[in-house]
Image (cartoon, rainbow, N blue to C red; front, side, top):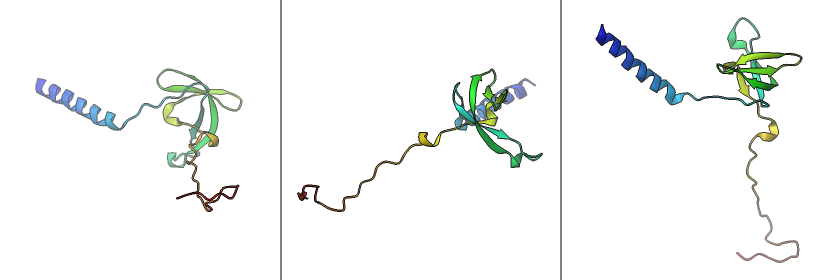
Length: 111
């Protein structure tokens, strides 16, 4: 019986390490905008993201309070995704193509 208990503990430690390799801790901050996963039918495959909604505060156990249209409600982080405004997305680097070697004064650049 003691051997079985030791094997179980060893296996649990291995499983925790394997899980932790690929998991990340997701957090949101008050004032962030978040999308909410809302079920649209009995089948969770057909759920859709709605929002964005303003995050009011962080509660215990990875729960967050959101300000919906006219009420506040608490949701788990698994139902939330951080919303990035279109202007917050990373803009591509500026690319310049020189088509003429002369500047505005008619001076030709040396190669």
